Length: 131
Image (tube, rainbow, N blue to C red; front, top):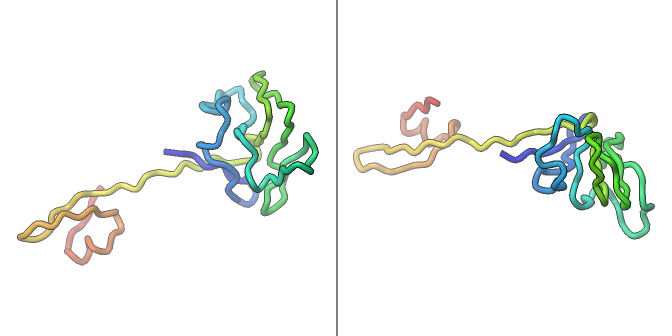
């Protein structure tokens, strides 16, 4: 299951686990930061941007981290360059879980259906899905 990182203030999505720098996968307890491999579009880091600065949530403008093209030291002591850092204390990780599905045969001439827990076809067929 992949994690998404959201602003703690407004829950705006900031990064996905797939976009994390190698240093942040997996994170150790000593790490106080989550590093993104490349700047995200919401960071607004173009050629005219300074070489270092703070990162603000695109929705609520709360400070969520910092960046420095020369690099940033993580709380565990590792140097990450270039550094696009999300402060672990200012973001929440949300793990997306896969939906559970069930393969069901219905009727005399069995029709195999792949159903979710809340699938209306199960209720129509009179099938109660128990997990």
